[in-house]
Length: 119
Image (tube, rainbow, N blue to C red; front, side):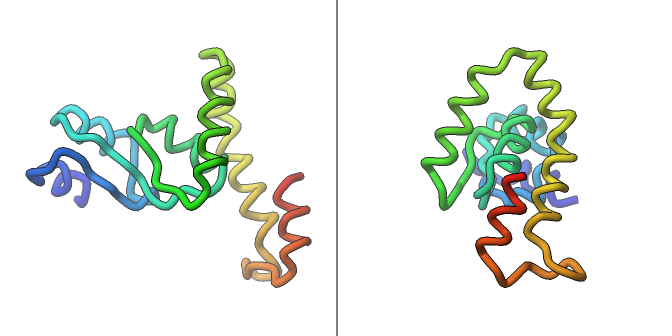
């Protein structure tokens, strides 16, 4: 299991692909005194999901958006965060569906992708 091997490394922090991060792997690494950063997180739903896992930070190509998500998350009550967490899987699927064309291929029309992604 990758997570167990990563936490055994002699390092102060870990930077892992966001697809490898789980709440268990993040907790294990942090319990061993390691900071956990995930890459590359460029959309707000994905960033919020990573924050819910308890990561120490995200590596992104969109730092302005990341700051906005952090600020918005700070205004949510505990109940709102839980509700958002429960809804985030559905939101992520809707966003993913909105940027995929027929057969799961990405649409070649950026304007159409943008319109579908913000619904």
